[in-house]
Image 1 (cartoon, rainbow, N blue to C red):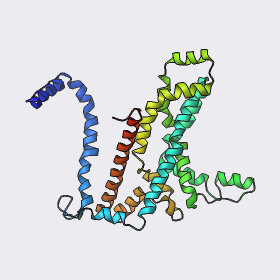
Image 2 (image 1 turned 180 degrees about the vertical axis):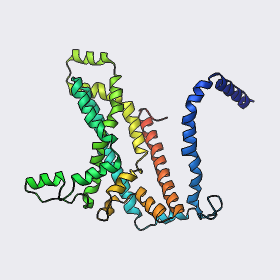
Image 3 (image 1 turned 45 degrees about the vertical axis):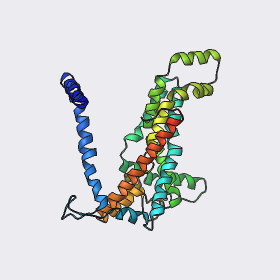
Image 4 (image 1 turned 45 degrees about the horizontal axis):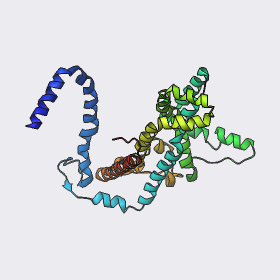
Length: 307
């Protein structure tokens, strides 16, 4: 009875506000078509897939492919590379947009502020293929500008892209260069909404800029920072495939082989669709668990969570 009443109220609301529901319809359709419908393919992780029988006609094999991945000879290396790159990016890359936003918030010259924003935003719009091509050119041992400068001061050229020890740092710091400006936008917007009376009171009290940042700016944007941190933690196991794949070569593969590139190798190149699906599902489950854990921790700490 209660469900019937709710259904009638919902139907009446849809009829009354049909124009608003039409506006949101494309978004709903997008998520259904491109996010929920493809989830049917998740069952491949538990089946012995064959193109002849299709997705629904294959034999169930349970957790066979999950066990195969966990017992793979390079499982530890692949997972370790993925986690280390993500944690490295989180530790270095996450604070960078916050620091940039706080610094720009202190700039009084509008022209200089726009110049800095333009320069820092621009790399975000460079395609990954072009961006990695620029990295390879800049770090070339023979003609790269970095090695030319090293030779000017009497140092030997360094094979950055061929040395596994440099891969993670190159990935993380180039990511900061490409994304710090774009990532700072949300924090700049949050700082713009801070009550100006707080700044006026701070000016009357004669506090320093650093103290103002610590006592006013950071607490004001902390809810946004917390939410962004939770979202980042929920993607710990997700390292961008395209950039890593383009930077990867036979010399640095020991540091650059991550879950997404491994899935590409065994799934598309090796045509092991069930195995690749199982690895992807394994990755997604861990990310979801980390998201729940991070959100629960920030809620217990009294901070703003996702829900």
